[in-house]
Length: 123
Image 1: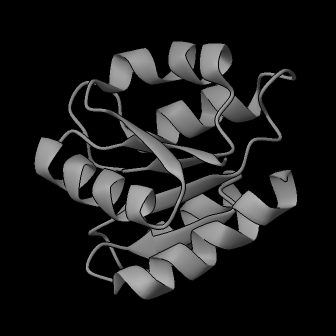
Image 2: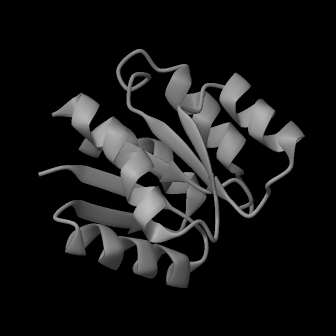
């Protein structure tokens, strides 16, 4: 079973995504404290990380950089998931090593399809 790690400082966003992924047959865990994400990724080795950008104290770009700079976890797919939908932010995320970028509010069917691409690569 695929394991997705959702990282968002808004618990309600985490809960909705977790429930939707579980209905789809995937295991999904949420982290709302951005400072603990990197350690969790190293310990759990999720199949995909869905990573919000705008979080307090440590933003998604900092977390993405830490993941991409670690040889043990750098190949884990990271999908940035943010309310920011401007071209500059999307380009920055992809340039920093994100595998994909999904704007919050995208219909879940499309989110599932896009995340599923990376789940299928791991299994």
